[in-house]
Image (cartoon, rainbow, N blue to C red; front, top):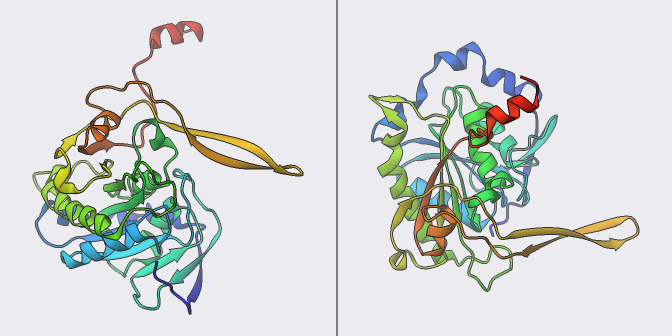
Length: 308
């Protein structure tokens, strides 16, 4: 990790940020047209592991090396498992003295996206893409609802106006590793370079006839824990419906309890799901949106039970 001491600290008020993001001036701009072209992009980079984490630093370097204009705004400390929660009120912001385009914020990942896009971005500019990652671990199946990495990327599609599409990037830990930030640096660099190429080849997918038409979509990308040369390639996958994550609390003292993370057997998932394809060694790409409602239940029966 890189250290940022001494730190220059600023205090920025977040109340009213959401209102300003949806104001008339924002609605009149059409900056996302750049996404539909071939030139460098304005990218807001974030994560939930913290702004000093090895994954986000590797991706930051790779995106800048490719010529993109990158502003890194991420939690000052690990904020894993915070989903799309928002931090209201005043937020402390730390600037990296070695790079004025890198910020750590005392808030959730989703808050970092809104704060970055509406208060920290250079005047007259806004992001073409929000990229969240590289996360230390996968985000597949039903785990997506808990993920701060996913929540941050989706914040661009729901809390910014106009909405900004994005990527969520995740790298699987080795099976025997349980420690934080266990992914080796050379592997993270491989993943970062591959993701940069993926941005270049898929950016047009968000567009139709020069206009951004999938602004409320995020591509959730998961990399298996193996060298990229040994993967099965890249596959578009559906979101699975299972997870091996198991959470529990145990007493740790008087009136206190400590959370523990474990694993549980995973039920078989769909053949085209992210869980299944990742386990088979593929890099998976899953389009996701913030919609939580489903149409797969017996709605007429539910309406009958509600008296309609």
